[in-house]
Amino acid sequence: MERIRAADKATGGPGEQHARSGATPNRAMTVFSPADEEKRRGVRRMKLTATGLLLLVALIYVLATWAHHAGAGAWAGYVAAAAEAGMVGALADWFAVTALFRHPLGIPIPHTAIIPTKKDQLGISLGEFVGENFLSEDVVRQRLRTVGIGSRLGAWLAVPEHADRVTAELSTALRGALTVLRDSDVQAVVGEAITRRANAQEIGPGLGKMLEKVVADGGHKRFVDLIVSRAHDWLVLHREEVMDAVEGGAPGWTPRFVDRKVGERVYKELLRFTTEMRDMPAHPARGALDRFLTDFASDLQSDSDTRARVERLKGEVLGRGEVQDLIASAWSAVRGMIVAAAEDERSELRLRVRASLLSLGARMATDPRLQGKVDGWVEGAAVYVVTTYRKEITSLITDTVAGWDAEHTTRKIEAHIGRDLQFIRINGTVVGSLAGLLIYTVSRVLGA
Image (cartoon, rainbow, N blue to C red; front, side, top):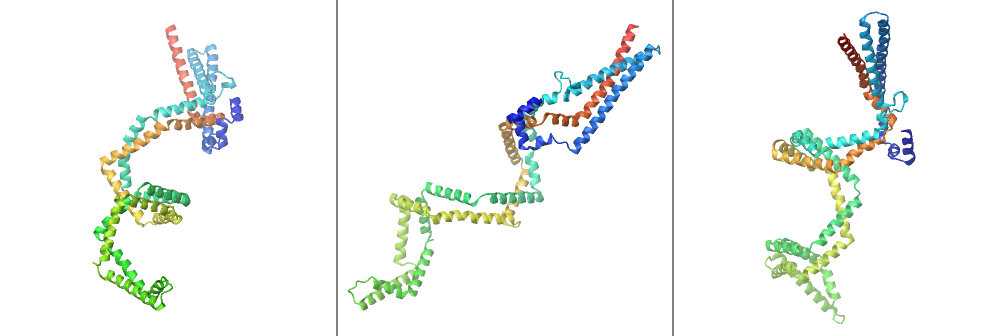
């Protein structure tokens, strides 16, 4: 075993790698806790007791044999036979118990020191035993069905204190997840998703249908009223600017007073036009605008040229940096609202989550169909895990045992079960003595 450990250390084998990693299971098998030390002291006391009993029957055997030869009577033969068989039983059980942990008397007898020499094989067998008897589909399903997770979970969630606790834990987990996520990564994902979805779907027909419905319902009239009213107010406040603009566009050879008159006339017509549109719901211009919007809505749905121009415009708008920045900044606003709502115990988010949990718990506690669905989901998930990752789970046992140091493992196992094993030696002494006495008695009776 020393050569195996040395080779493992030199080659960086599993045991050495496990030790380098500082894994807790390996460290637990090389460190003795105060409880372990107390158990080892108990084992030593039981060893002294069993050995003392062996010495006692040996002394009895010597004295009974001497007394029998000295003519003390028939009783001495019975006592000597019982003591002799007790010694044989004690020595045989001492050999069996010792062979589990080390070579008896240091002699490398075959099939002794079983635990240190067969540690890895025991780990493999233990992993296979767990996989076959605890991680099988039938065992998992049967165990989960007897538990009744759906009804128990429902009854637990139906308690307000438990719903509050789950809500708080979910809020903490949500805040933690949002804190871990980097804004730049999420913003890039959101922006890319929105852009890809927008590019993948033509918006012309949808806009046409929406515009057609708005015009049919007269929903655009308030918007027209606003535009016309603001245009009228702007003309009133910017009379000179309008007239200067008209005069500036006049030919250079026209007289100044003529340009002025033309500017005044244009301004008055514009002001009259906007005033009439503002005050007359049945103005011809409003009707023309309605017909234009209706035709445009129809073109958005059926005219290929109009739809193509809208798609090009959409691509240009989405490609602008300002739009991408706006899409990205939306995540920061959403995240801030979610974090604030998760931290506030009286926020609408947490109150709704709590109410949903209570409602779900009440339904799960009383609805057999919902309980069956939940149980089926849990069973399916558990079966998937144990069937898909059975080898990984059992290899955890195997690799952990393989990483233990053989000497320390032996000492620790002996500390935990050695005291009970010493009772085997004591029982072997007592049972051997009784068996020897019985055999000697039957042989004497038959011989007589």
